[in-house]
Length: 329
Image (tube, rainbow, N blue to C red; front, side, top):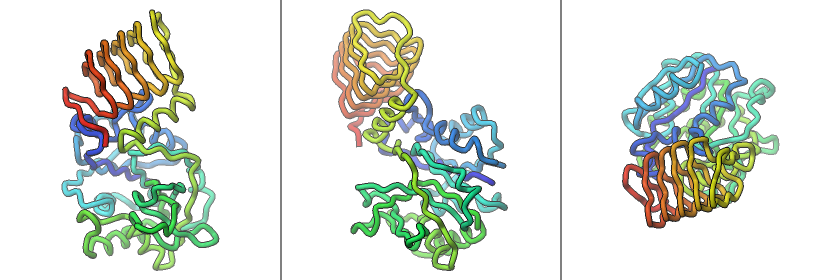
């Protein structure tokens, strides 16, 4: 099996951090989002990663080569024409079933279904309230997809496509993508992979919809912080090992070795990475990168990149990196 990983997007909802850090390498609970995703495929027989790059592609390529023990091929998506366009770039290198993973989410899914289900493919989905933001799936009584609707205005379904798909009939998939790319583009001038899935179903292919135990969005600040909280509550929490004079630590937190904290309240739901310094301050529901300095300040509901200084000020519902501050989107 080959794994296709589309990574070309710019992550505009996490600006200014994503000017410097590719969205899949944004860290949550001390690790890049992509690491959690790659953990999930460890037990599978993966022949090769096919990585569709774009924004900050050199950083992505370097990280993958250095950190994952799986052969990887990199293909640049020079025109951001949507998910169907991205996956189409992998076509010359696919000659077997594929797993497609969009890595701006963390998921809890049973990937062993791949070896147990007799279907042409599997699309993992999660029931959501804000169905208008997603492609949603309509199924038959057996759980097989009949329709997939991109960002519906009416609640035809609340089963959101989470961006994790296994396609056994890869030839039919690429026929569907070719058909989609010949049609007029959809919203935003983009071609959607979901239209290729609809093409497959319309021609008799059976795509099973499988539920996930959890799905955590890392694409915007509020959901990234919710994901951070979930990870801290389920095994990633880490309290400071050294002295912490005048501190109040409110769990759960993730605080690396090499962080100095004094006369400060930290937590709940806070991650702070090595080299950071916090004094006379309050930090809640936030992620602070490496070598961040917070003195006489308050950081709340925010994302702070490496090497930033917050001194004598309040940062709330914001993203800060390279000296820039943007209100969270």
